Length: 289
Length: 253
Image 1: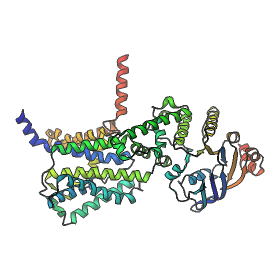
Image 2: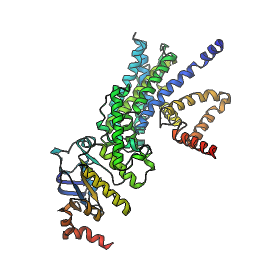
Image 3: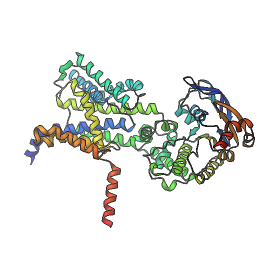
Image 4: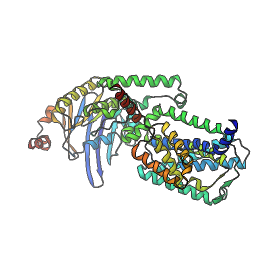
């Protein structure tokens, strides 16, 4: 049994780590979505966090928690600076502006010497352990669950539903939007820091357009009306390519097909409490008859 | 308590309001009437900070509202409802009302994060108060339902309760009976009288003349962006200029 476990872990630990990191990323975009903001900057924030944490670990003797903290603070600061002008935009305009920001970050990292240019950073010390990811994912879930149950969560929901009405209920809409943006950036940054410390190498193309879309897909696939949705979405979409490995060249096509089916038939994602509730009600009613 | 001084507003070349002067007195119900497109809703948008005046000043209890953001104006004590109802449909009735209390929930971030007693106490009190406000508009039995499931008249009443949750000194109602049948109108009239009786000042915009004349203590008439008359309902009813601008039109229909 133990032998089997060791073999399994050696092969699949990266997948398990990936689930945790992706869950944090999906939750980071959930934060902005729950406030009605379609921001696609989270891959870039992940990259900023990853580079910040990795460079601290490689160039200084500072402990891992400090590197991770820097990986949270730096993207949060960047989010604060770019959020003030860009969050005046909404809908697709915000999506385009944040995608543009992501591209700017990628090009800057690509051309800077200190970040290793197109080669990226190699030889990042392997410091991330399973419990680091589990702990930080749990902390993220706890934090977001608490926020959801407070006036902040209600303000987010109100802004998402009707910005003007929220404003006239006394909600400082620009400040709450900025808060959601910065919080999302910090979570994505920590995920980036954790990721960099088990992949050994990172490069500017790890945090580009497709990654931004992947993050959004995981959240939307799982459902963004609650915290369980993005977590499940990230888990399934991380596992799916592994499970479909036997289909070889059809793997990616099948992956896409599953995505399309879910989006078509479950527009609110896999984890949609209202639909699940209605389903059980129907079943109960059916049994009673 | 709310005073418009020489207010003008233009959108590009379109002059919507010019030299509008009136003041809403403390207590009682003040009505602003006028034909479609007279600029009534613009008056509310200026008073709540959603729009800025092109000229003149707005004064609320001695404070100039000229550069105060909308959420701060709410804090100062002006709340409003909307002509096209704007409730939060995906939230429960109770949550809708608690959103209105946003400014009055004073717990710090640590209280929220660690579920401290102060946090729980304030949240519980807010829910209790929200239930009370819902009972004022007779919706407390539906508190846990989604706002989406309410009828039109009920949604309007929910909007009242939510606006009252902000602890306003002055409540602005934008065409509260628009699109309602006579029975619903009468019911809402009683509701507004109740709100007045509880000590809130009310400022309402309305089309329905009978509704306005029966409810308001004082009425101002807006036509083509100008105030053409102001006074008690009986006086307004007999003002020839008003009859020409407004009532005469109604008879043609």
